Image (cartoon, rainbow, N blue to C red; front, side):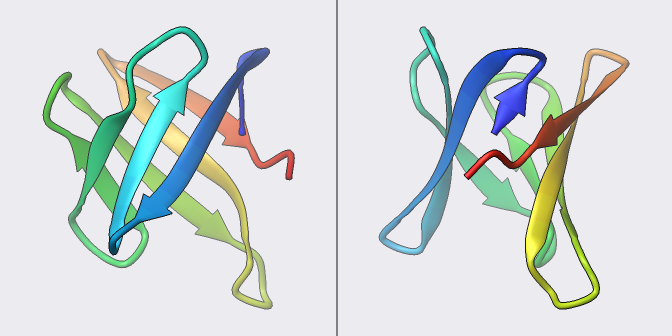
Length: 74
């Protein structure tokens, strides 16, 4: 994913999702629903957006009153 020009990886390990922004530690994403997750290390949540075929095309990060669109690059 592209987080305002900074690479960010979202990976699945043992049925858990993790977010790692370049230069920062990997953090676990905790589910609220099938497409919405939150972080415990900071007050933030991520919503995955799917296209009509069900493929995730981007993620929306909400943190500290800011909303950032993370475009899927791979």
